[in-house]
Image 1 (tube, one colour):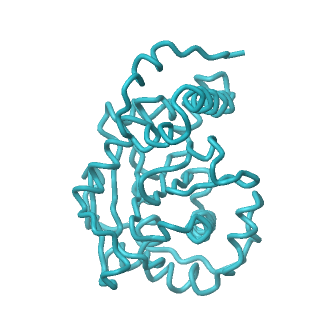
Image 2 (cartoon, rainbow, N blue to C red):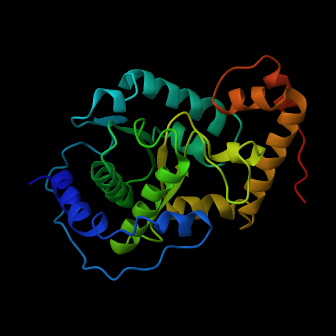
Image 3 (cartoon, helix red, strand yellow):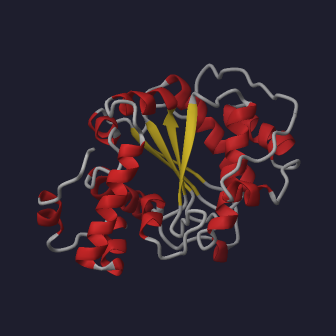
Length: 270
């Protein structure tokens, strides 16, 4: 029995059936979902992983209704995500430690086709186990999962967060969610700061906690500086280019005058 089968068994038996379908509302309002005292489900370490941990792109799929799937092929999705990472996450310096991961070839992309929640959670857990012992960061891209509904997507985020806690990965691995219609609590859909967590597809970004902490230490322990700098950049881009063009920039599109604009940008680090 391989590790994906085992992780799916765990999700099927423990996480998914007993999850409160309203829990995403609690999470969406900025509070943690109630802790559930469920039995642990441990799996043996595989002697040989079904995929090497250093493979850059992995794809999983299962049968689904044709109308439920995006028409884009895996290569197109990979290219769009690579462009987004290079032009937005790194190009605009939205994430201060992403460049190191890229230079070390430690940014991994995993595409999960279809909207089977158990399949998606199984892959997230598998990738989290890989990241526990291997440096780098993984983008689990789910192009067919609640692409038009951020609230439905965030319900799966809440399940994934609980899953990490249940498997004693909390404090070791963290998940940063991205979605085409990401919306912070209290914001309207057109608030510019929503763009910090928007991406071309629904994405679960798996991060190693100690790598995040190391990056924060370089900011004198103040992680809010990254957020403040990103919001300041977005506000200035909106003022200069307008909201629609700013959305295009944050989707990874090239816009005339952007390089000069970034070159002339100044930020208040106080």
